[in-house]
Amino acid sequence: MFNIKFKYLLSVGALASFGSFADTAGIVLKFDHPQVMSVSLSSSSDYLNTYQSGVKNTSTWRIKSNNGVNIGFSGASPEGNGIVDFPRFYKQEVNARSELIPSQYSYLETTFGVTIINYDSIERGVTREVTSDLWYSIWGGGLFTTGTPELLADASNTLSPNGYWGTIMPNDQGEFLMSLYAEGVASANSQSGNYTMSVILKLTADEQINP
Amino acid sequence: MLIVKKTTLILLSILSFNAWSFICQPADTYGYEGYSADTLYNGYFRYNVTSNNYQSYSIVQQEAGAVAQEFWCLYQSESEKTNHITSCEQLATDPRPVCRSLNIGGFVDGVTNITPYADPLIIGGCSDENLCLSIPQTLSVSVDETELYTDSGHVAGAFLISSNGWVDFSFSGTSLDATGFEVNTPYFYKPDLDAQGNPIADRYDTLDATLGVRVSNAELLKQIIDTSTPSYDSWKLNSDVYGIEAVQPVGTTEDFILPFSDSKSPGYAIGAFSPLANFNEEPAQIRVYARAAGGYAQQSGIYNMNIVLSVTAHEQ
Image (cartoon, rainbow over all chains, first blue to last red; front, side, top):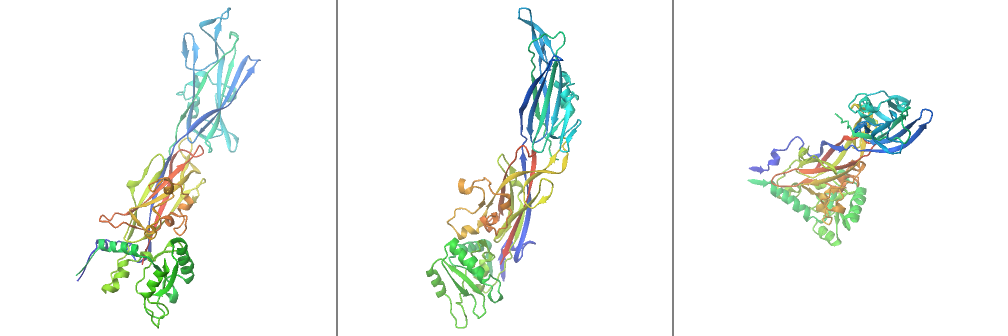
């Protein structure tokens, strides 16, 4: 009688064989590559318009990210005893003795325009072509600055830069350029002197995820 | 009544391997299954002289007869060769010494060959017991889902291999290049998305990746043959720098998919293995570790790498 207590013999499956034979299995490794983002001021220049008695500042940022971003602006300027949350050229007025007058400010009529260029795509807005592989889009007239300070700084407004473009996807190298044009024009009652304005660029990651 | 217990069989197998000193491989003379004289001299004898301190060889036959199959046996010393040949019969009708006891094994051209998979039960016990018991080799490969994990440094996946014999392994994989063409190299890749989250046709990003492999819960043939090297259980995990438990994948995807006959492949570096014989009969495990890196030009998100493990059993 021949008895083999060897349960492997009982469990020999379809792949039990003599000679060479093979089996395969596959896996999918998943790697989560994080979004990164940086911004640097590429250039900034002022143009004094003596004919219109005004100034135009052009600032260009190089924005780098490997996924979508939202842009927004903020700023503040004094008005009376308070502060309003939009940027404009202002100066505190002085009296005849060159003393600062409390709560009294003079303003330049301020308008803004924004241009983005060399991106991949935008969620909304109109894209214009420079060449077949280079395009741009403008808000507020771009160089011709028709946007108001209130719209520039109101990110929730669909007419603001953020509302107009939505998500901006940088190009395949992970970057695009954005220029902010700010123009201030003096009126007859604008006191002469140095006007100032502070605008803050806010960059927010808006990562688009593969389904 | 003959009762054969598995644990005893496996133990005999291991002891047999460890006890070997001289090793032999079959020749294809007279039409037998085996290796050519050129392979046996250059790929077997000379390779093992260079790599494993063997010094001499002799050609013998296991059965009597003028056209019996020939075997090339390698020895680590002349005295060992003399002892072996002395133990053999030299019949006038046979061109070679007839050595009834041969140890089949060793690397041919640095690659695990088919004969180490021979079951010692069949070779050693058949004639003595007048009983031939042929146990077929089994093999199954599956994915260890519980072992998939990621951390900040690397990602990993694991395969489970069940077999009652020695197996070789290799990897393959596919991915899509930047324009969506399928390539037979595993990279991390993902489709590019536009600002609305829609995939862009024919545009993909890939990440530079490095890979490493570790075999666990297995007996490693290379370690049996060469006990002087502390570990053969990993490929490109920086174990030689940071210790045998190191997990720092540094292998290229191109080397990762080379066949196990290539000295740069994981299958060559680790060699043949057999799942450890234990009471739980747990499968051996092959873990694949990957590390990836990208920059601004690689869109963020989840990247996939497709890897296929092929395990080959060579039942003798």
